[in-house]
Each structure stands twice: as structure tokens, then as C-alpha cells.
Image (tube, rainbow, N blue to C red; front, side):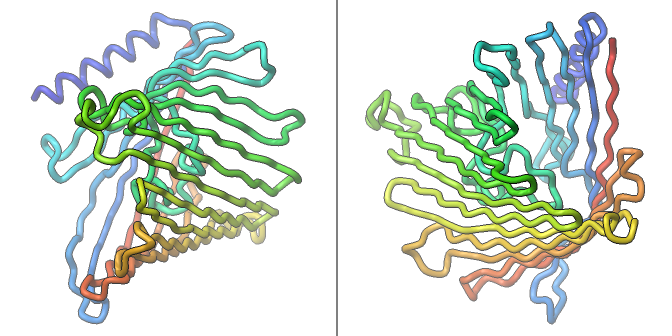
Length: 342
């Protein structure tokens, strides 16, 4: 009941602010999903068979002035152990300051996007999250401040961020005293080709020794990612290499995604998508890695009406032979709508 009252209060407050302020955009996005999970494909051991809503977003973006705007997003998550099957949390809550002395730049402050790799602009060509988010290397959002900008002549994008480092799900006593530093760079040398990389660094003894800060369980964290994206007519390809170091433990892996847009070939609103992931959380250990394949189609028959349908099959295969391969069949409908209040 308490969770319901908090959610209702937040929604009413956001609607009130949107009505009394200036130009304000608001939007909803809901994911509705059917999932069947089975192990040991030869025996077809069904372990999950259900329809649910894994994610929903409510966003308000007020324009406070020509140079200041905000974003506030609530993330509704359907959880097995949530309150009556669901919980709500903040996803974004930041101010955006533009028209700075440096041309085409802006500053974000608050609960901001994590400009690491592709996690901040991942468009979900398949239902699964981006590799660094899926393997819990970084979160898609974090509390912090970020200075961002466009390179001249559309040559790319850059971001410099200082963040808590623990992600958007943790605050207060769950956050240690030491910030994380992030540098991100995207370059577009020719139209259709993007190359770039990100580095995240956190020294957890920078501002306090381990004996003072009880939150410290490891002293050094460094993650980096390199990426290449290629888009030409009906074909899109992307490759991402990811590495994560925590003290002396180094994990690494990569993700490859390919997409064919049938609408550009035969005017059929379908996309064929394939993804292959490989991840080893400790390169010095054995039997702790896994691989993942995903294949599916995005049906965009109602995309102009805000509805996208995704049908996917995926399989996760473990190096540890005592673990059974996990297979999923997913049908998902993502629908959204938005409006602007003047």
C-alpha cells in the first residue's frame, strides 16, 4: 500500500508540474512479454511459461528556459519478489544545461545516463539488454555530472563524467566515498561508420582508506570498451569488445549484432536480427564463462502507431558442463506514446 501511495504521489506531482510549467513533453512506454524458458532442449524441461510486463517507463521533460531543460523518468519493474508483483524506482532525474561557451556542448547533473560503450544509446534490436549491462559491468544510469558535446562538422561525440559508480539502483549507505571517472569518445570518420570507446576508472582508496570506508570490498576498478558500428542501406553491423578489471581479476568478452532491414529491400516492415555474445568474468579461472546466441525478427507493421513486436529465440551455453543450457522463446510488444503540453 505504501508503494502505491508513493507512486500515485509522484505521478500526480509530475502531471501538476507539467501543467503549471512551460513547454513539457511527457511519454509512456510499456513492454508486454510472453516468455517460455526450458533446459535440456532434447528433453524440453519447461521452467517458465508466462505473460508479464518486465518494464514500463513514465517520462516528463520540462523546458524551463531556452538553455535549461529537465528529464524525470520513473521505471516500473515487474519483479517476482516485488510489492504485489511490481516495484517503482527512479531511472533518470537530471537537469540539462546548454548554450555553454563551448559550442554544441551541454552539462547534465543528477541521475544521468551512463555514457559507457553503447549502454546509453542501445535501441534494443533484440529484447535482451546490452552486454555491459547484462553482465553487470556498469548500469545504464548513475548519479553524477557529465560534460558532453559534439565534435565539429558532425565528426563525433564526447563525454566526460564523474559519477557515484554504484549505479542508479543504489544510494546513501550503499554508495562508498570514492567517485568513478568516465571518458567516452565516438568518431564518425565517414558516413555510416562509427568507431569509439569508453574508459571507466574508480580508485576506492582515493578519498578514504579501506579501514575507514566499510563499503570498500575491492580497491581498483577499471572497465573499458571498444566498438565499431557500420550502417549501409539495409544492413547494420556492430562489434563491441568489453573488459572489466576489479583489482587483479580481469573479465572480458564481446558482442556482435547484425540487422537486415527488409523494408529497404522489399518494402516489408520486418527486421531480421542476430546477436552473439561471449563473456568470461575471470580470465584466470576455468569453467566460469558462457556464450549466448539470439535470433529473431522485429515486426514494425504498427511502428507508426507506437507499437513494435519482437519475436526471439535465445540460448545461453555455459563452459561449466554441470550447468544446463538455457533456452528462451520470447514474444514482446513494446508500445509507447508521447505528447507535448504548451
